[in-house]
Length: 262
Image (tube, rainbow, N blue to C red; front, side, top):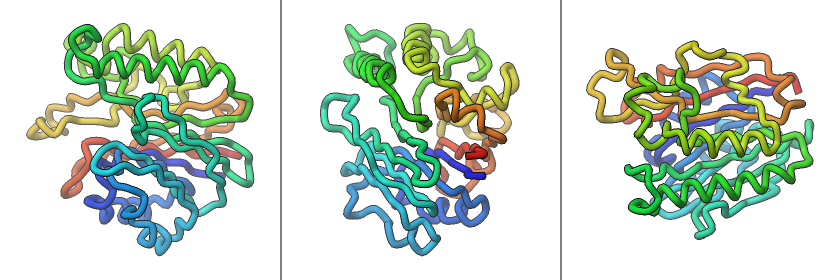
């Protein structure tokens, strides 16, 4: 059994004590982080190694974005795609040595505030990012997991209010349709919703603006773990660790973890 987790950490250097706590308490074999907000040279590599996570692939960037995959099982880095087409560090891919499964760690752009590319270039960049991902997905030959912060909550039950968020970036129809085209390009299986079936409540992000996130519970499922059909068929359990949202200096995202019989 192999466990694989994903977490938008929102600055790994600031929140390394939280990462350490999570790894000690939950011990995933592989952890994929997004928004690490640091260059590779300043990534806390030794701290991870001291915890047993000696295999590391870090695609960093100063102050913004950045992704990292760490593991206590062997892997080889295989790719860094520039789906943003501007040099931003938003992806790193690794191949797990024992199973051969490729784990693609991605941080899709948030897309700004206005869901209109004519007045908000960031929204257009998000859609174009997804279009480039879709072209790539159509060429995938290996058993693959793609996971991370997709910044899209595709289902009505993935948000606290479908009606209230229809015109809010992350849940607009054009984003949902664009993500669906990406999914169809490789027949990706949404493993989270395979094991936590809609319409069951399932969120991974709550805004910092909420004074009491548990009471208001205005969450969205922005983080995902998707897989090729052959990999998804081996998923055995999937959990959302919501308690991390209560930790001091927490990220606004919480970890997801899936167990596979690989």
